Amino acid sequence: MTAEQNKGAPERAQVSFRELGRAIRYLGHYRRVALYAYGALFLSIGAQLVVPLMVQNILNAVTEGLALQQTAAAPDLSRMAAERALYWAIALTLLFAVIRGLFAFAQSYMSETLGQGVAFDFRNELFAKIQRLSFSYHDRNQTGQLMIRATDDVEKLRLFIGQGLLMSVQSLVLLVGALSMLAITNGSLTLTVIGILPIALVLFMIFGRVSQPLFAAVQVKLSALNTILQENLAGIKVVKAFAREPQESAKFKHAAEELLNQQITLARVFSFLFPLIFLLANLGQLAVIYFGGRQVINNSLTIGEWQLFSLYLGYVFFPVGHLGFIIAQMSQAAASATRIFEILDAQNEVMEKAGAQPLPPIEGHVEFNNVTFRYFSSGEPVLSHIDLRAQPGETIALLGATGSGKTTIINLIPRFYDVSAGEVLIDGHDVRDVQIDSLRRQVGIVLQETNLFTGTIRDNIAFGRPDATDAQIVAAAKAAAAHDFIMSFPNGYETPVGERGTTLSGGQKQRVAIARALLLDPRILILDDSTSSVDVATEVQIQQALDRLMQGRTSFVIAQRISTVVSADQILVLDQGRIVAQGKHADLMETSELYAEIYRSQLVEDAVMVNDQLPMVNA
Image (cartoon, rainbow, N blue to C red; front, side, top):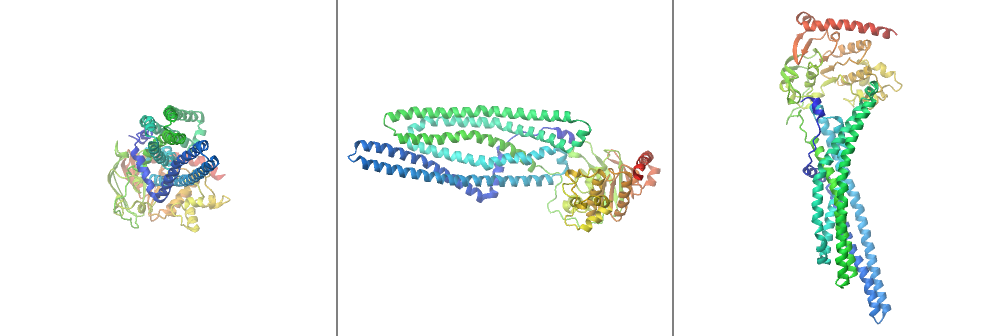
């Protein structure tokens, strides 16, 4: 399957609560905060369960006082005793309410701290894993999908761990505590409502199972929407240049409609669930009113006991009602946890061996021994049986049509991909046997697609060496023929480049990228068509600088025009992933019909290009 085919494939929507359990174990990173949060929760619930007892005492004090006033010989004394009991009950009720409020605040603050801490850990782990994943993983996955998992999915997981999980424990403890108090208060009346709870729990289990894939599907639709948004923002110039705004708006609208329909489907499920739960709760309350009222009439239940029972009954149905919200959050979090761990568990196709040693300072010997390469370990090989030898200081030029395998060869040197067969050696070391960072620090690369980062020109040149001095940065810029245009800006090297370098021209960005690579002073230099975005005059300047800088470095140069590489020590002509001709320019002109044909056709093209641009240069 090709990268394009993989990118178009739908995301998996299989959800597992096992992954949610893995996410919850991240609370172990914050044991002390979790202990405080759950300790405050239990104390708050304990204070909450005491309040109905205080209310019962108040009502009993009132009713007993009234009875004593009617029968006692000294009604005033009886009234004073009843009032004293009433005041004590009210004071204790207020005390426990304050205690509950204080611990509820501590619980809320600590739980939010927990949720934010776990989200912090997940964001950092996701970013670090995405950075480490090989190019092949990014070839198969869209940027928008990865962004949603690192942002929206993490946020949904944070909400559950910071709120939903604590609410689940709170509801369970409150439910068990309230049922226990109900059974102690009036066992026969408790039996009238306890039969409703299994029905509610079964309903929640059914709706939880139904809602899980629906939440996962919402995240998939959201990823698709975000991908369209990200691609259009990144390519807004192309969209405007081709007047594609109406078509792109229609595409975005279609994705937004799919997301809307999926969310409405989910809302329909929960719109049915919550009224059903409240109906069950109301049925339970009606049963208590009927049977409790009969016991009051028969004098087997006091008003205070009936009120106590009613308050505890509220504590039973309150968490039952909350379970609907908890199930929704839990299902969302389970779907998001599954998607997050799909990235964290993704196998990296370029793995560092256990015990890999740092690559020592190299001289620049590069060997490809019978190298074959396939993308995603399947399909037709992109490279077949490649053999080449590069001595230190040599310049190796790669020529060939688009798709012939030029870029793939240079991607194997810094180990962006691993060979499917054969080996790539640097100074006799197989690149798979050394530490990746130590390898890439000794390889300077200027890719065909220039990527600059938000910041100043200085920051971008020093990207690989943040500790470089101003003198070293200026020297690299001069060598890349970038110093003059940089100094033409009012802020010089402190000029902001804008997002993706949008404030610079293509040629300027390319020269900054060249300076960035040269600042590393690498022993191996890779130039992937690095003069493709400049005019003839600038190309001449860059080529002269590169000719000087490639002295003493092993250089691999991909160029579309033969005129830029005629002086190379070796020229490799590739066709359909194979080296079909190899040698110096003069030898290839005699031995390779393909090379000679390319050279003659490009002489005509270069002559036309120079004539077209000479008036601009003279101007």
